[in-house]
Amino acid sequence: MDNKWIKQKCAHFTMIPFGLEDLGEMTEVSKFKKGEDIITQYMIESDHSYIFAEIDEGETTWKLLSRIPDEIIRQIDYLAWEEEGIAIP
Image 1 (tube, rainbow, N blue to C red):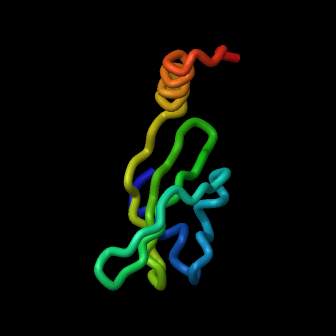
Image 2: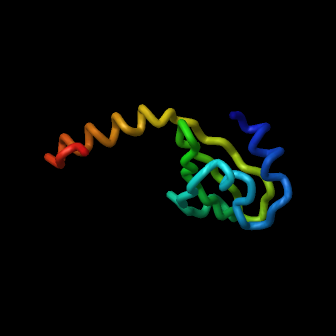
């Protein structure tokens, strides 16, 4: 998956993250102002990875930030759980 695919998939939407939600659950993780722009960042859970992307309010294309395989996310979760003394399911 690359930035070009996201731009093609999400080329015709207005303020609704259309296209990427087809991959899986979308979670807004950050919203901030950058100059005059309002940037919203999302984490999108797909079958085998987590995709992090952002959109500038009023724009029509996504910027891909990163793609992390789900096994890496699971390892991070396990390490955090161990550190907190939480039983691993």
